[in-house]
Amino acid sequence: MLTYILSFLPLSDQKEASLVSRAWYCAAQNALQEDASVFSLIPVLGLSLRVLDLSSCVALTNRTLQAICTFLTHLSVLRLAWCKELQDWGLLGLGEPTEEPTQGPQLHQELEHRDSGPKDPSPQPQGPSLLMLRALKELDLTACSKLTDASLTKVLQFPELRQLSLSLLPALTDKGLVAVARGCPSLEHLVLSHCSLLSDEGWAQAASSWPRLQHLNLASCGQLTEQTLDTIGQACKQLRMLDVAMCPRISMAAVRHFQAQLPQVTCIQSRFVGGADLTLTL
Image (cartoon, rainbow, N blue to C red):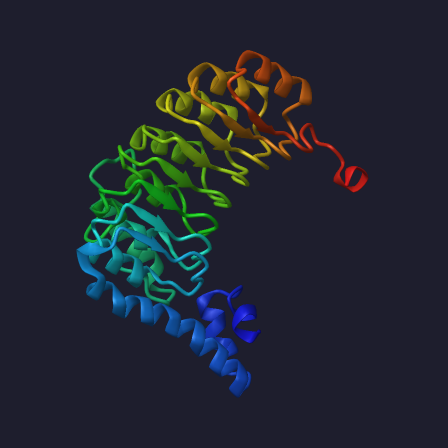
């Protein structure tokens, strides 16, 4: 039970919790050893592994992710949902910043200096970045909540990727959405639920890149309106399933209009659209 409780804490807090008592120490060590075990197995698995599911390995570190990118380059499926310690540094193949506060500005300046384009100051992929997994067909980054556009715009460039989940990424913006659309044009299944910064403007630029899209989840994307539905209806003619549940700015009338225009969409999840009061509806 303690190990489960500790799984909700950041790695730094897990280390502090280990000082509470012997029981807390053992639970914290179990969580940390999980990452060490995965790290040690990766070189042994080598090029033979095709599917790797590390969902809910909450202590998984950037070091382990970079080992995956180095040794498991033939992966076709990588699931990292709820690996909450993963950061932009890990995906980009860079070294993690030190915990010393004086290093922060220095690292930021160094990254800006490395960048080749003055209009885009975000760091570029180097070394064992996610880009090394060129065979990926499915990628799940659900609830990797420390990830931002800084890495997602650079490493999500997989022309053959079919399934992608970026659900519960609070820092994903329209810029990231458009970059993903351009880098992953073959997507058929896309989950973007609870990405509250996405807007109609982003979808206006992204939708045309996804003509193969069949399953789309936009639940709880609070800024989206019926304009996004119109955009998707015009660009994604192969769509079969759409989830816009709990999107307060999309009305039920807009959902019905969308379904009338695209009768091939056999499943539309639209519970609590239009800002329905959950306290009264449940």
